[in-house]
Length: 283
Ligand SMILES: [Fe+2]
Image (cartoon, rainbow, N blue to C red):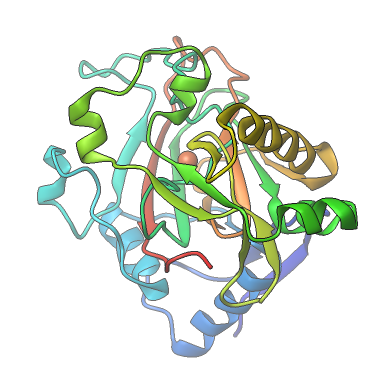
């Protein structure tokens, strides 16, 4: 039996896949079916999955090399398991960090400040607030395609400087420390990147994008702000409303995403298991 694809979840992307148990090894034909759906819909939602962190890791490893999470993180010892992300402090109490300028509540793509950013990210919902705690995805390929031709011509060939903490700087936060700069030196990627599998062009920008290479910083930031505003309009966005047991994987090469602070973050627990798969150098 093959997987069952639902109707597209939005104009911007997303599809639900049922009839598959991700906790068991999948035959190559199913893996290929999932890859095909991923290329077509960019966000895959597998509801009602029951899986351990190790089983999640094994499933996601079908799509490429899974990146190690946090060199200084104690979880590194369990490298063959998904890592845990949550709104909990070290004592297990919910804490609201949503106002941090480097928080994942701002539009971003994961690790875009790396020379080789990841192709996909997967999250599995373990604990959720009674409502809210959504994740939004903005399709930067359809956003790019909808730009006026003159704008597409103007931005062709431009490169964006990314670094960890760029969002903090733009938000009036402090400059990065020498240690932070050493750990995360700035990188530059094309503003218009080509999806290596579909060939479609997409904007590459977001919270870790600082400015445009070779352009006055203020001018470059204004351009990035305008493009971000454009590609995150409602017609380019899919909002995922989580249910316990959802495994969601998305394509970082043509999507921005952000967590939505639409619940009492300091009151309710929200725990998900995460994997990130290594990508290729954007071109
Ligand atoms: Fe993220």
